Image (cartoon, rainbow, N blue to C red; front, top):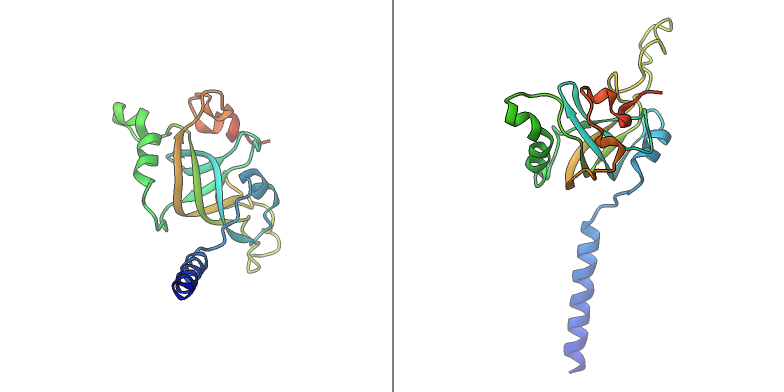
Length: 178
């Protein structure tokens, strides 16, 4: 009987060890913390919650407690497509009925991926042009998130400041530049 218990215990130990070794370490900081503290050229694997804004100019992740900050969302390298269709459908819902493509509905998402701080300065540029343009990934975002998986997709709560309907997403409270 002791032999069977020992074999079961050893098997259970190896099974648990294999499962934990297969899991990668993913940080779970707040999006605002990442947006404010990421250094130029820095990148790390994270899981973050934020408000997904999709429009003609691109897709962005914002949060109410960090106005003026936006993270560019890149979906081209996604590995787990589980919630992509649901997220796209929810974001496009108001426009689909009108038969147009454009600025979508803000939705609450939890996304896993590689988070990049502002791009570094191109050392090959002439000194006279360095620092004269926007130091971000595009004109709206200082940071970028290359998505590997969308963990959850929900409607934005009615009391969320990012839900305010405006004609232009850059007028939304969560997308204001200081």
